[in-house]
Length: 176
Length: 162
Image (cartoon, rainbow over all chains, first blue to last red; front, side, top):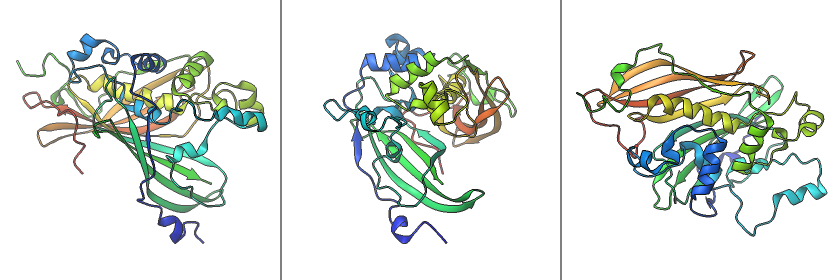
């Protein structure tokens, strides 16, 4: 028996919606991020250090892209409103990990993070507007010790406002 | 004097089995986790709501964020490779949990070093160990370093050859 039907296989390769950050990467957002991630490299805040580096300007750390395009746009519904009717909600939007792709319709409840793979091309500069677009690159299933498991590999390509590639990230979601 | 001598590590400096300087963070408190969750706008309660994490999700405590650990491994690699080198690829998976109160030590070891098309390609085995000796996060990273008398690593980086 397989969970991965022809219909589910047809999802592979189809690009999802393109998400764009609410605005250009600002110095205060970058400062708070760099402090929270405890990043020691001054090219992320010091203009002189950045100018002397290959980057030439202040840049964000390479994996910053993961958090840019999923930020909430102003004036959009408050996700925490859900806690009014569902006080036991864990605060996690599981579908957010799927980059807006159509859900894989299988009768499995739990979604686990099966790992991350990233390739880096360029660091986002201060003022960059970051976009993200995802697609499934592989969907397969396997019989695990505790029952069937479905593995979905989701590729997200991050680009800046000039369409230059910043990073390519592949996440594996395990459904069981 | 070579082009990269004053600007960092080159391929010839690397030997198989070399250990990377460790990057240590911690003990990680709930304040660190709250600061991180707020910075990335992640409201998953298992990171900051202790009663929820323990009573509702049955966890042994507040969980350190996987996203924070991803960046820690990137810092480990870039701290060793830059300014002359470039972190081209990194892969990691989460096998175990780390909790508030834990100290994280990111480590790496060179397992492959080859010259390709005038650049040095270095593959490292990487991981994050907590003070209980558990390697909850493990993975592999590929860095590109210039040769001592070779051209600089191109930027933007075009990607690794297949």
